[in-house]
Image 1 (tube, rainbow, N blue to C red):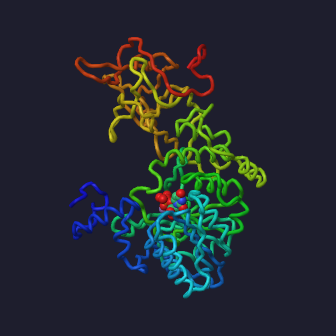
Image 2 (cartoon, rainbow, N blue to C red):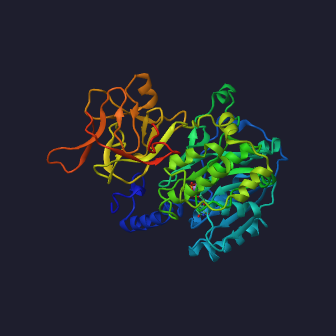
Length: 523
Ligand code: UDP
Ligand code: MN
């Protein structure tokens, strides 16, 4: 094995020669998935039917709305795109499939230029007019690519998908019949996972699509009233979407398609989710509609997703989240004043919101997404340093584990600290959701070191979890009166985080909320 550390060969590739390994690894690095294998698999490979069994018995009317399927791509492998097209042609009723729109977000790979156009022509000989190709003249990012696909479509319904997908049996009928019933529903199929290494299909269980305060998407468990229906085919109401979706083409246009001001990647799905609900639509996941989505081990087009996601998240916060927008700033550890993140012009989106007379984010939280729990008592946040040594920061420490440490400052999630006016100190990435708990700094009274305990547990156990602190003074436990301090053991070269009798050490925290901690104001 020439690449013992490559994720590609963990589960796959036992019988390859060395030359084949080198070839496979090269393609994997370039694409983030196993193109070597994809090039060998048939384009019309069969897929296990992952629908709940009752879906397979469902009958749908013959005269459903027509559908345009948009596939967006930048430098995806040709065999992957062709397999997506093949699956759509084979698994969508031909009288309903109006067109497949390919949107090339300015790929540089040669095989996606002339050679792809040749292949499209060949498909169109067999299926006249079915395939369309739209090319961006410069890289515009996935949001613009989806918008271009929407613009080029003409069917009643548009499904906007990644190009590395395979639609599964009967995927389209549930979507089309649901939109026929109610054109204000934006639909997410269930994505089953196609593994990046061996292309195995792994079904996902039913879930709703949500997000955290950084506006990063995540799965939420399905609300109890869905289970109470005892109908595994029933739509699942969902606060947001993951990225792949289908909608009534005109309704999607009326509510503003997607925010064209988003860069490269991230945030556009949450923006659509929030906007849809606040502006009079709904979002549903349909368990009977299954799309296999090829996962990637890494994203070849972007090394660091954070800058784009951060600025895109701030656009969403600014336009849609009203007085809750500060939560996004906390989650990304951005100062509320002078954030110095250029999120572009949002005036057109704000106008859209006004024109559509959309509801507030407060309404959205209360009625659609109560799992988001705003934190109203945070008065200071960010990295926290001791004035004795300002290149180290409080850090949540090894995971799993519950012992915070001092560590070289990098400022990422594990070093985010949140001080509450009520005295709690959260350490680590902000959760602030109902089903995910933040961890609080506690003094057990006995140990020399502090611990992190899930805050609700700390309350239940009556642990000493409240601290007095202001900018530039000691951090004192209200109950035990011990101080959070740092010590360097004899002969050691690094500081440890301890609790001890106060010696007058001082702490600072990166950002403050309003005028907290300024001279003369009490903590
Ligand atoms: N994409 C694009 N332009 C970009 C980045 C991505 O058109 O600048 C396409 C990409 O080829 C893919 C889709 O957008 O079809 C979604 O990207 P990706 O699959 O990497 O995101 P994920 O599904 O992992 O969230
Ligand atoms: Mn994808």
